[in-house]
Length: 143
Image (tube, rainbow, N blue to C red; front, side, top):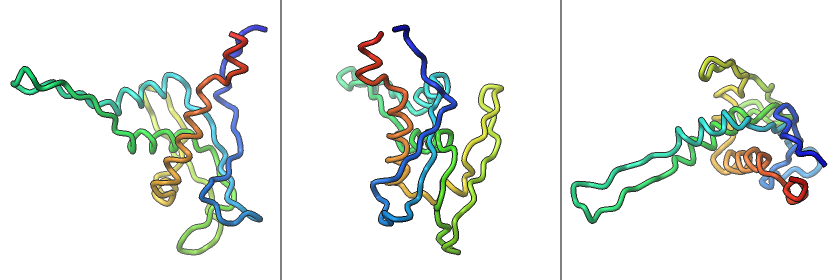
């Protein structure tokens, strides 16, 4: 069987582990980050510090994970059903805005939506979005 690429236009339905309403849950529609966009975000989130003037001090590399997760969700969230506005308790419409990165325009989740998600939910959604870019065992066997 020939190697098949990832479908960056495909979405999947996802219900958070944090969801309490099992009968009428919030459903997130998640897409993928294309490899170029993901690399851009990973590179932006890497912080490298050279060692100090002391030759025994090692260089440091850290990842700004929270910012990376927010970008992953902002670009990977493609819709949502039954997400309630905390002020009105009514379902919130999914709004997007256009963002340009290196000359390419993307429709991404509005900042207003991202601000309402909370850190734990953002981490969970980012993990789900980013895990889709990894080949499954079956796909690896076929390559």
